[in-house]
Every structure is written in structure tokens, then in C-alpha cells.
Length: 81
Image (cartoon, rainbow, N blue to C red; front, side, top):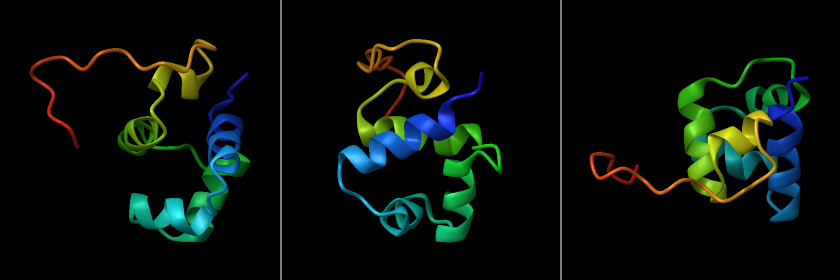
């Protein structure tokens, strides 16, 4: 079962953020972000990466591959984005 839409909604609600705030962070419309949360549109990998960094979780957590939120250490070649 794909659960990325559930995880991004739960993370947003846990931090008392609005869809509009996250849409602004991702530079997309609130209506598009809402579709990501409802699972009506697939979340592009680059946006999943940005959301994982924003929330301090791993992309694997967003995808439901693990229940461990802690992100992996960044590799030396990857700069903060």
C-alpha cells in the first residue's frame, strides 16, 4: 500500500502547518499539494526529498518502507538544499 500521502498529511498536521504553507515551500499551488495529500497525484521524487528534509525524516519513512523517522546521515558529496 502506498502511504506517502498519509505520511505527508500526518507530518503537516503534527506541526500545525497549512497546505498553503507547504505548497509555498515547494513552490506549487495549494490545490496541487492537496492532491498529493489525497493521493490523487503522485508526489515527484524531488518534492519528496524536499519534504523529507523539511520534516527531518527519511524518504523511506515517507514511502512507508520504514517506521523509523530518523533520516540517514547525509553523504559528504550532498550539500544542504
